[in-house]
Length: 538
Image (tube, rainbow, N blue to C red):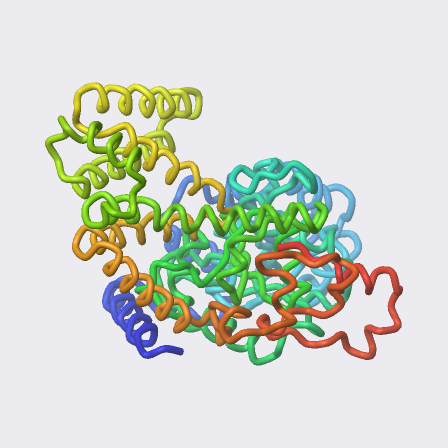
């Protein structure tokens, strides 16, 4: 763990302790045996909320034998509660007739646990925090008078958004499913692709207030153990009030928080997660968000699309070259135009120079101010198109760009060439599959424009040297960010800028800390093993 990240987590933990020192009490104690006392404590703990449902049942033979069920309305499934709990307790299993008159409390509790409740997922707890967290998660709690333990039945409501095609990672060929806000659904989508017992899942709750469920998935025989332990250790070090989206986790576990480049990859596609799991990486799923994190991450990973592995290798290589070219267009073209126009006129062909001078004849601003104004105007239109209602956002952004650009040229505020440069830069930014890298490129081009307006090409060269040095210094969970370019790995080059045919990809990349398949797994079906080794998707 880097020193900067250590002090940042220490600061978060300290502020968290200050904020909750007077509000949160230690409620990690066993439950009371008296049923009425337990129900009163639950109501007091939850502020007598109106959505807390408490139902009490009484034995026909022994009026002192009371049983209560507690659940949260809206989080628990009412229909399943009526079918499995009320039906079991009141109709199907007349427990008062099956138990002897002199039955004790433990026998009554065991009867409900083993025979009365027709629910698959049942847990037994005697901890107050566990019971309250289960109620707030949508579970149903069964309390028996005179017994300190409680029965927790998983009857959570299954209302969720249906599986839809991905919105940000569009593909023409390949699966059309994407993750939803339900972590259980997301886990099932991954397991549908990887039907192997080596796909391990570990869950934990993060957030003092939210208690958000966070799960890590990895292939036990592929991912390195020290990488798994490092991920689990960083997740356990998080002390924060709430985790509302996977971006919280991403910001708290990444190595260099000051770098504009993303060192954690996120995706909403199950096939992308599966491909990275097969390469030895780890997936972090967060309940309540469709974005899944992938660790560790390399720079070349943001130029790979899931569709690359469904197309021919030659066409994929061509498209990847286009994406790398688009990245350099985004960060360099405005700076190069400023440097050439302001400092290096001799590099412009004569006819083009005459045309540019004619365009700039009535423009009142220097080329650097002109470029800055146009780039900011484009970013404003881009953000407005994103935040506006979907029905009008796209139309308004397109019409606004055309009208604003044409009006600015006719008014003599900017030149037509500058409109072309800004438009090319904006279009190129949409060619990158990794949206977070696109955001980094959009930020980097402004310092490069400043360097170009100050020192021309010398400023651009100095800025690029600093940028490359920064990229080579980054690491993602111990993996060099620029691998396999730096340090150079010849074997790893067959899936970076160009993609080799799938028949030649018989080994996993070394940059992802992957391990070979274990001998116990070698006896599995040969076709399934070959598919896992070669058909990788990122």
